Amino acid sequence: MCYNLSMKLWIKYLLAILLGILAAIVLPMNNTAFAGFISFVTELFVRFGRYLVIPLVFSTAIVSVNKLRSSKLFFKTARWTALVILASSFILTVVGLLSILIVKLPRIPITVDTSSEVFKLDIQSLILSLFPTSAFSALIDGSFLLVSFVFAVLIGFESATAVDTPLFKPVYQLFDSLSKLFYNIVVFVTEIMAFMMVLIMTKWFVEFRTIILTGIYTPMLIMFIVDFAIVAGVIYPLIIRYVCHDPYPYRVLYASIAPALLALVGNDANLTLPLTIRHGKESLGIRRRTSGFTFPIFSIFARGGSALVSVISFVVIWRSYSSLNIPFGDILWIFGFSFIFSFMLGGLPSGCAFVLVTILCQNYARGFETSFLLLKPAALMISSFAMLFDTATAMFGSYLISVKNKTIEHHRAQHFI
Image 1: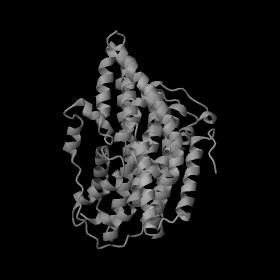
Image 2: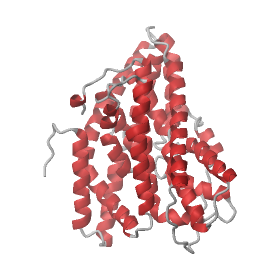
Image 3: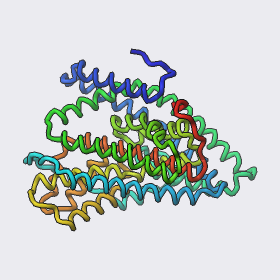
Image 4: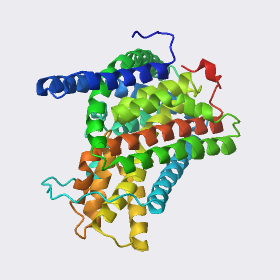
């Protein structure tokens, strides 16, 4: 089967996923050497996909912040972004809590595994990493985007007042040109990523099939799917419909298909970010002055999906150990802890949802310190669905903010990439 370059991008990604599933069934994945080769190539493709994230985010954020401040939209955009992130994380945490309290999932068999590794979220180190000893060191870390983003905001904010002067105008023009150059390269990368998705999906499906074949985690999987349908198919479109007065809110969901597919399979926020930026621009018509600011911020802080799946996961763990009802005070603690700590996962582009489950268990104590091991075999499923929720949040949230800022050029759905 060959790819037609005129195909919609989401169709290319969907075909790649189907081919990946077929490859996982046909290829000798039980062969250790072959499986190792697939893992190596997949890691290579993921790194290639993340290769231009820092250059794109850094150069585009400078231009975006510069234009936002020049047009006196910077603080309005920042307020809307913070509000949407807080509101979406709250909504997702509530949805996760209500779904697991209303529907009682089957218990998971208790294991006797022990863990010698204890994950600790070093918040102080994360804060200190925002300001390394050299500002240029901010361009080295390819995982924690906030480090380079803060540097870019400083440059863009201060250069806005002097962009028309002979001294600073060349600097702005340089980053403007670099932003457009890196974006054009990203367009190429996201196109060929459709081919790379075949092997990425092959590896993902092999691991996911192992999780599902046990049957233990299938009810949790169904709950994740139903919750996503409620959030992305009902709640978010209703918000767009009444907050933005948009009669066609499902256009945003349609534009989110390809980023959602990559988020689910790639399970990496930095890998998905270039594709969300591209769909935000070419499908939804979000202008660079907004997308260059909102998409990176959503990628870093909008981890409500991790809060949703971690609440569900922890309650499942709790009920697996006890037949008693969870005290109301403990329910509030689980909700508050998941909600608050979801904002502190920006340094983890992948796997952050299971990390949050681990932190929940360790801080709840009372013999639950290592109870996260019950869900360790399902860590891929938990993290993948968390990334799926977060990607939908970034697409709907950035669209809402761009409409409020009037920095959008609406496109017809048939013209979406």
